Length: 186
Image (cartoon, rainbow, N blue to C red; front, side):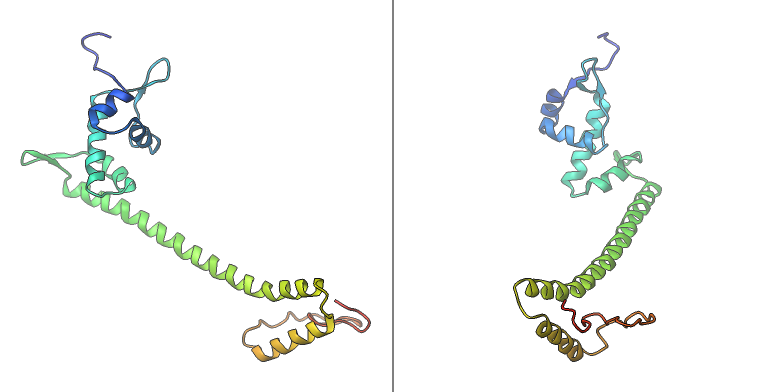
């Protein structure tokens, strides 16, 4: 290594310098927050810029920022303001807009999942009586008695809770769902 090339640290040395575990550095790399160079033997090597970036990540994490928020923040440079480095208002607006877009996308996903959950619960409620009937039949209960119980339960519930049956021409020997034709036992 020449005197002009920057010093490169192994993951262990970089972690010791930052006061974190090597696993922490690897985790941030897995999340795409840092991309160290690799040696010929594929070992991670960190330079001073990597360490500064890790320093920013660790400071932001200590302030309670999420990794998704930090990812957006790392896309924008800090500017010198009054002897410190801060984000410009323009950068803050860009970070806010990017995070707001993520929140909006997550809200849409949550709403879609709620609709899907509601549909799954409706379908489960629809199938549960069918499963109960089949389990009771397999346990040896009388088909006619069970079918009569289903008719009674359906009549009690009224037609408001059940969707209308699809209309199709009935053929001789057809039965409605839940009914058996003469001589047939479900």
